[in-house]
Structure formats: structure tokens, C-alpha cells
Length: 438
Length: 191
Image (tube, rainbow over all chains, first blue to last red; front, side, top):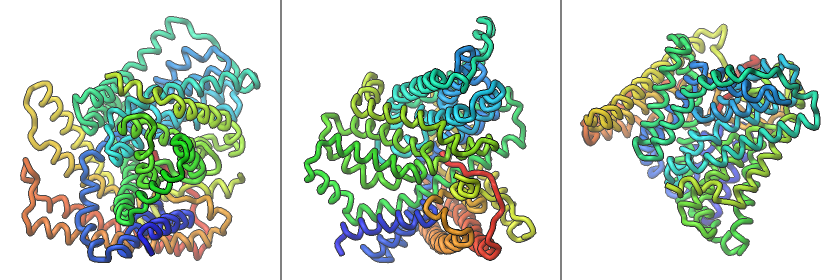
């Protein structure tokens, strides 16, 4: 069997193992190791393992991941979710569907200090869901908005998936963060438009609440500045090279942690809760990273990605068609699979192909643009049935809402995701303008 | 999607096992380890802030600050692994097996956890070999001369717990399989 066939075969076997409930990280580790042994033997594998695990877990660039996760945990304890939603609802609440629009705005702002989609969905729901239900919002609109709004947490930088994409494709984290900004804003506006159209069609779904006096509106803005400040310092500082992404994440975590202690009244119990939640999420990410290390080493040995790239090039299809085909794969996989796992599983195969396509951009531009596209495509998986983690989280919080109502509520937002993806495919400048400007 | 399907598609996160002193102790230990790792992460955070302030504000850079971050984060991350395992929080795809009976799913879990245990045992073994290698060659970090075997030693200890947690989860899936049912728990979490 040639290396190419072996690579292809084990890739398929890995997918099957994942379908049979093997943890994704383990499947990549185990079947990558099997392939490694078949190609070069047992001794090289165990020699690689002497140092590969430790060097992966002690990597300076990847240490940004637990730090950003910790920052997101502290942000809830600091009550920033409450302050952000309050400010947004003061400005938008009087409109029809206003609280849903405010939820989208709150999610977007919370996303600026939180790199995770689930955490954003869960924390914003804590404050927004009871309010929307109190004012008689329909179940579909309320849960759908929050599930979709949660994805803004990862689209708007900082973003854990972008960090890991950057590390694996050797792109600059700062560039990717900046590139995600305009697409993130397009996503926010897109979701707000969805809500506005939704309540135009079904006026009862989102009644307006009383208008808030201007004075109160302005004073509500005070709740926003800590978030804005942390975001500007962290993302700006990383981009301008004042400090490394790891240092930026540490500064952010320390600042938000201080807020949690002073404003949020966080004490030992609260800190402990933040730590174990961070522990759990960090560990599940690093298991996948550990698996990806061995899996990628095996795929590189098999030469499968390069040869597949060759095959794809010989197809002579327009590059844009190939990109769209990859995005479709992500969207389909996303229906059943976790976003980060998908990125790590496919990147060693997809990225060499993308890099070899002639899209009329520099290689770095292509890398950044594709990173944003891939991020958006995999994030759709968080809200597409049947396996949409955000939907589950929201649904667990609104126990009396049947699952199919949440699915129905989320569909218009999926539509807006598709439109946005098309915009960014057709106009790469939406992603590339900001990083190219400075 | 009805109730059981929703439950099936959801990732299980388990709490401390009841009526099982060994399991409960292992759970408490791994949780303690996770908190310890978290404290290391906080120390890294504070240290990094001081280092940035020292470098930009006071013109007093800390030489080799990266090495502290690397050591601290590796301790934290290794310390997190057993807890995640005890909680069964790893990412799995539940969609395709949802039509199967609970017992069949638990049977699959038992097989996967057995493979998991074997893999982590190999990882632990090679970590020991790698650590002894760095000890013998007296490899140090560049600026602070921190011996690499320090990091390896802690990683080894944490991995022993991780392997134990894996072996325990085999036992747990077999138990669930026998009883053909498992405790209902909250939903999962990933970024």
C-alpha cells in the first residue's frame, strides 16, 4: 500500500472511529500512531513520544489558550455580562424585538473579552433569557437569538480557534484577530437585521418594552467601558507588538480577574469555580492538540496531503470552487462535530491545498482569509441541528422550551450566516482590509 | 427531537460518583489537582503582568520570563487532564450512535476507554523515558537554567493520575453497561 492510500484509508478510519464515540482527540492520537507505526515502525513512534507530549503542553504560543479561557471565566464573575446587556437594552429595548437585538449586541461585546462561543451563549443567556421571557418574547426568538449570538463570542476576537489556526498555519495571531473584526461586525449587524425582520413578520414574538430616559441611557454606558478598555488593550497591544499574545491574554485575565474581585465580589469559592471550569475546557482542547500532533506527523509522513493537493490542482477547477467545496464540507461536518476538532482534523489536508491555489493574493493573505472563512463555517456547526452545542446549552437553561422550537428559532440566523459567508468569499477585503492597513 | 434523543446527543459531564469510595477519592484528587493547576495558571498570569510592566514601564525586563510561563503552563495543563477525564468531558460525536440502546453505547464507551487507557499508559511511560533522558543529559532552559526534568517529573505524576482516571472510566462504562442506564447530568462545554 502506498503512503497516499494509507493516509486516505486511516483518515477514513479515524472518521469512523469518531462516529463510534471515540473521543476526537484520542482517535487522532491512536490512529495517527497506528499509521506512524505502519509507515516507519514502532521505535520511531515511541522515540517521538519521549518529548512530543511535553513540548506540546509546554509550548509558549499555546499557553495563550488557557489564559484566554480564564479571562472569559472571570468576565462572568465580574458581572460584565449583566452590565453589557443592561446598556444594550437601554438603547434598543424600546424597539420591537429590542431585547433580542440587545442580546445580540451584548453577545458581541462580551465576545470582545471572551474567546469561546459556548461561554458567551451561556453567560449572556443568564441575564438576557429571563428578561426576554418576562416581557413575553416567543420561545423560538429568545432561544434562537441567544444560541446564534453565542457564536459572536468566537467570531469577534480574541478567539481560541483563531489562535490555534494561527499556530498550526504559522500565521500571525494579531493579523487574524484584526481580520476577524469586520466580519464579526457584519455578523452582529446581520443577526440584528434577522431579529428586525423576524418581529416584522411575527410582531407578537418580540414586544417592545418601555422607553428609557436619555439620562439613564447615557449612564448605562458606564457599564461598557471596562470591557472596551480590556478589548482595546489586549487586541490592540497584540497587534501592535507591545506584547506577545500570551502576555496580552495574561494582562486581560489579570484585569478582568481584578474586576471580578473588586466589582463582582469574587472570593475563593468563585475563583475555584472559574479554575475548574477553565481546567475542563483547557484539558479537552489539549487532548485534541495532542492527538493532532501525532496525526499530523503521520499525515506528513504519508505524503497524502501533498498528493491530494496535486490531484485537486489537476482537476483544473476554479480555485474559488475548491474553497467553496471546503466550506461546504465544514458546514456538513459541523452538523455533527465540534468546531475546534474539525479545524484540527482537516487543516493538515486542506491547508496545503489552499496554499497551492492561485487566488491572486499573497500566501499570507490567503492564509488569513481562509482562516476567517473556516472559522465562520465551523461556527455555523454550533447552531445547526442536530449537533449544535450552543443550542443544547441554551436549551438546558430554558428547560420548558421544546428543542424543536429552538431549532426553528435558530434557522433564520443560519440563513444570515450563509449570506455573510458568501460576502466574505466574494469580497476578501472584508477580512484583509484591516490587517493590511497598518 | 424528543427528550432521550436530546440527552443522547448531549455530551455527558459527570460529577463525583456516589456509593463508590475509590471513585469518589479519585474524583476529589483530580479536582484538587485541577485547582492546583489553576493556581499555577494564576501565578503565571500575575508573573507575566509583572514582567510586561517591568519591561515597558520600568525598563527592567525579566530575562527568561518565557521559561517560567512554559513551565507554569505545562504544570497547569497536565494537572487539568485527569479532571477532564473523570468528568467525561472529552469531545465525542454522539449523533450516529444515538439510535443504539444505552447499553450498546456504554459498551462502545468501554472499548474506547480501554484504548484510551492503553494510549495514556504509553504516553506516561514515554514521558518517564523522555524525562530521564533530559535528566541524564542535564538539559537546562536557556536563561534561567531551569532543569527540564522538573517539568517532566510533574508531568509524569499528573499522567499517572490521568492513566488511573482512564482505567477508572473503563470500569465506569462497564458498570453503566450492566445497569443499562446512567445518571442524568448537565450538558457539555467546548469553545
